[in-house]
Amino acid sequence: MTGEQYLFLPGPTPLPERVIMAMSRSMINHRGPEFKEILYRVTSGIKQVYHTNQNVLIFPASGSGAMEAAVVNFISPGDKVLAVSIGVFGDRFAKIAGTFGAQVEKMDFAMGKPADPDAVIDRLRADNKKEIKAVLITHNETSTGVYNDIKKIKAGMADHPALFMVDAVSSLAALELKMDEWGLDVVVSGSQKAFMVPPGLSFLAFSEKALKVHQSFKNTSFYWDITAGLNYLDKGQTPYTPALSLFYGLDEALKMMEEEGLDNILLRHKDYRDMVRGAVKAMGLQLLADEDNASTAVTSVIGPANIEADTIRKYMLEKFNIVLAGGQQSLANVIFRIGHLGYVRQLDLLAVLSALEITLEKLGYPINKGAGLIKAQEFISKRLD
Ligand SMILES: *Cc1c(COP(=O)(O)O)cnc(C)c1O
Image (cartoon, rainbow, N blue to C red; front, top):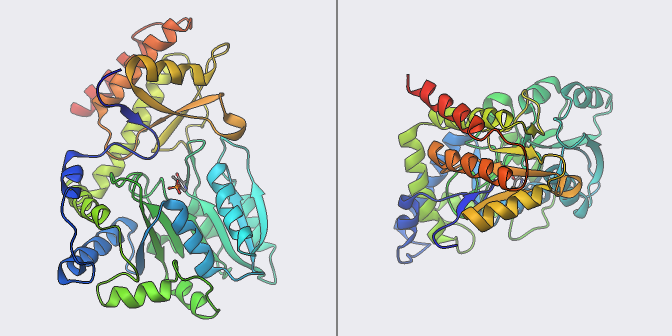
């Protein structure tokens, strides 16, 4: 198939032309005045997206890098941590903590469901001796398309001193998150999801409280060390060579985000979710996530009986050049996922929904062709009133 792919993954996401152009620049001295300006501008832009006045460091890494940075900087070997998991990325956070010697107590919830806030809060209330040093939780679980009510859980912790550490890689700028107001201690994100930048930068935001915890134990990492990161940031530098091209792209993406306005961006993602869910339901297909906690970043669709989810994905790719994500672990070949975060436009989603209807028809599903599409068109029309 000729032409560019239509990328509907929950990361990496499509890139705006402006970001692509911004990255086609020569290198500059990463210890010079020009980079200092970019670093400060970008760091301050990211803080606005996090709604924080505290600390943000940028690492040359995928999102998992900042997750590891969170663990090695704020959790000591032997520390007891409560890892709340509702899917693949919750499992990953727990695994990283275990890898670095934390005593991990895992609270698993069924894939496709959010964590029950009361169950998590009760577990922390039962910790009379305050042995739990950190709570690890995913904001938006990308593998299922479900988000957790982290605001409620954090509020319910009341005076429990554990650090509240959030994986917000696929939620930041796609779903409301207010780091300081909600009292989040460590929040991780990355460039290739809602930020409209290629993979390769990850963000670590941390509170003053977390910084104190970090300073109270001996850090064992060079690459992720936040003390070094903060010291260099004071000088307008990073401890080692930054991914300069990605900084150019991020700088431009943050400008675009400022022009659009964060509230509008969040609203746009909510609209994508509602539009896609409405259309898919009108096609007679089932959604994995319930209404209440359905992700604004990605929608998981359960394949119809007798048609494997991966067969649908394969047909979409071969005939339309449309890339959808598959299911992982127990959901492999059961669901397919439509990513709708970052630089996705409404009309792009209309194309996907239209192609999905044709695909379903060709694969023998009794589709009432046009039903989903009309639903989506009505959704767009209403927004224009
Ligand atoms: C994408 C993602 C990550 C990071 O994955 P990388 O492949 O390391 O960038 C972590 N958590 C969530 C919830 C994600 O969606």
